[in-house]
Structures are given as structure tokens and as C-alpha cells.
Length: 481
Ligand SMILES: *Cc1c(COP(=O)(O)O)cnc(C)c1O
Image 1 (cartoon, rainbow, N blue to C red):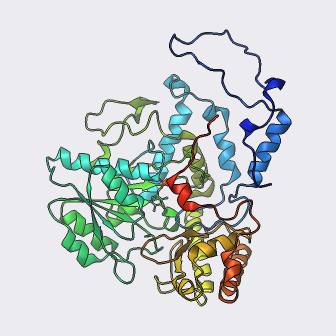
Image 2 (image 1 turned 90 degrees about the vertical axis):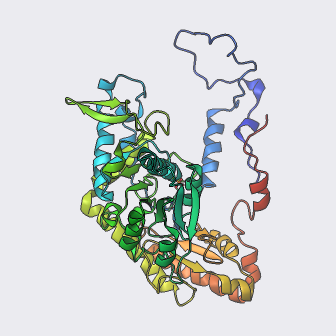
Image 3 (image 1 turned 30 degrees about the horizontal axis):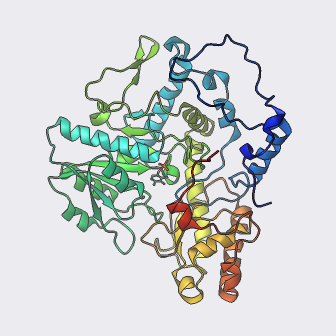
């Protein structure tokens, strides 16, 4: 049961490969030097074997369709099937990026509509859909900030200020975009230390990146003061909106003093994720930054939508072609089926569900920040349990697997020790939440009374505990034939 064969290890090459259809177009040969030197290594399996192989893999995969998946910061909400139905329409899924522009007017309209709605939701003047993920959006947004200062001959501004409660990608993206990262600490309550921020700004401040709600699930209380400190110092404000699930339809980064924002369509806007993609991390910005956005931009040319490529001030392309289009189709479908009231409801219920769980768990678990309140997620600390019973956050997460539940995010954010970050999302019923709450409490009791049982979990999964250090240090990412 445990060692599943790869599909290449199945079948029998002597039996022949009869799944490849006959070629039904004229055969052409590739240019000299580009021909294949060896026979293509395809699995020689029957249709039955293929079907069984993938069914087996499906059984070993855990997704939102299998059970509760409260993976904090990742917004593992249910992805309505209508999104996929729309993305599967041949007019969307069978287009080629180089086909004549008059044949893809509907696709361009999808981008235009998504631009309009997301602009409304974020309070931004324009959106760009090239970035393929959240971190990619951050990189793009920071390049806009860089272009803005350079265009004003203000090139000494090379520092981006990032609070220590930011998502880990924030400092990484700032460094990738060529900035020096300045960290500001959090207060004891988990908010940006406004005084420390005041001391950190100066003539070298290019901008500030805020993850809001921050990684402990709190909405920054002094947000307007924070953004004006940066503006007064001559910097721009960047909003990490990957986790917009708490504020969508309720509050807008554009109204809070932010100049640029990215969203993760693959989180808040209900398109499937996990397993590495495809994602979409559109960037929105205020008027002052529009001229630096990546090209091409979609323009309306006398009733015909077209791409415009000539923009001297643009930071250029950040991705080939026009972004992960079908993800945008799914997100647009989501916005159109929910409407503005529905989107607001989704956020309010996401916050309600998180607070319900927090409230029911706070007497058993240590929830160090938020005074018993949170936005769309909350973070608990198992430091005590670790100290007293040597049951760590990792042990706890592994024990959850035996209950058919995906664990919360572990050991993040770094400012909470033995952290478990729980994000239930709005698409779970009260019954599911109640069941999860009972499971959390049951494991807690087990950890107190029989810690070894927790140390030995999981026992019901195909593999127990992989060697994580080895997996991280010596990953085998490629199959050697
Ligand atoms: C998920 C996340 C990101 C990164 O998004 P990717 O698509 O994984 O690159 C950035 N910031 C926050 C707050 C996130 O939750």
C-alpha cells in the first residue's frame, strides 16, 4: 500500500504503446539540431492502468473537497463548481495568446470587467493581471514604487520598511526588487509600533509594506496614522492584500492611504490552489503609478479592445503573454455570482467563523494576541504544552491528520512560539466548526494524558512522518530514468 509505483514504472515496454492516436496531420520535421536524440520515454500502460493510477493518487490527496482545511493565511475555501464551468467554455479555454485580436474580444472584456470590479473592491484606479502569484504581485508593485521615485530623480530612496508581523514574502520581495529591508517591531499587542515607525522613516524611505490583517489575524488599529507617516516622509504605501478575505466589500486599501496593492485571486477569489498553481496575483495602483504598470495594457480603440505596448515609463513585462487568464475567469465568475452584497457577506462570515472557533477554543488554548477577537484567522501558541508535555505544534498537527482534517499553518508567524494559525473560511458550516473544535480539545486532552500517543501520530495515513530536514536539504525533484 505504501510504496506506490510511478506510472513510468508500470506496464511493459514490450507490449507496445497503443494509447497514442495515429497522427492525422501532415508530418513536418523540426529544424536540424533540434531533433530528439532518444526515443521519448512514455509509460506503456493501458487505459485501465492509467485510470487506476490516478484514482489512487486522488485518494492520497487531501483537498477542500475531502474535509476541513483551516490552513491559516492560505484561505482554503470551497471553489464553486460554476467557476470551473465558466473557465471550461471553449471560447476561454481554447484560445491562443497570439490569435487575432478581433477574435478574442470576449477574453479582453473579462480582463476589463475584472479590472473594474477589483478596482472597486480595493479602491485602486487600475489593475494589472500579469503577476502569476502573490509574491510575484509584490515584486511587481515594488517595481512600480521604484519606477515612481526614479522618475522623480529621487534615487536615494532605496529602503522598504516591513513590520515583523508581515508575511514572509514581503521582505523577500523587497530584496528581490533591489531594496534594502528595514524591519520595524510589533508592540506587545501585535500591532505596528507607530513610534518605531516614525523613527525608521527618512529621506531614504521608498515605501512601506503592510500585510493587513497582519499574520496574527489583526487589523492594524492605527492604519491611517501609519500610512500618513510614510506619505509625509515621501514614501509610498504597499498593501499586501493576499488575505483580503476579511475585508472584501467592507473596507478598501485605497481608502486607507495605500498606493499599490496585490490580491491573491487563488485565495480570496475562490480559485483552486495548492500544489503549486496556477495562481494569479494582480496588482492594483493609484493614478500616480498607472503609467509604470507592466505592458501591454488593454485599451478601448473605438469600440474594439486592443493591446497597447508603447509606454516608455512602464516597468516592462513581468510575465509572458497576459497572466493566468483562466484563473481570472474563475475569479470574475465568483464576483459576478456573489455580487457586491454576497462578497461582503463572504468576508463577514469568514470573520464570524474565525471568531466562533477562537471563542470556543480560548479557554483550552493560549491565544496570545487579539484579546479574544480576530479577523479571518487567529494564532494559538502550544508553548506551554511543549514545555510541560513535550507535545509540539508539529505533533499536534500530525495528530489532526488521524481525524481526517488538514492541520492549520504551523510555526508561523515567527513572533508566536509553537504557533498554529487557524483560518476556517466562510464556506464551512457551524457543524464542521463544532466538530473541529471537539477534535482540537480531544487532542489537547490526549496530549496531557498520553503524550506518546500524540508523538506517534499519524497512524492512519499512507506515510507517517517524513524526514523533513532531508526533504528540504536534498529534495529529489526529478525522476531519473
Ligand atoms: C499567500 C500569501 C502571500 C504569497 O502568495 P503566493 O501566491 O504564495 O506567492 C503573500 N502575502 C500573504 C499575506 C499571503 O497570505
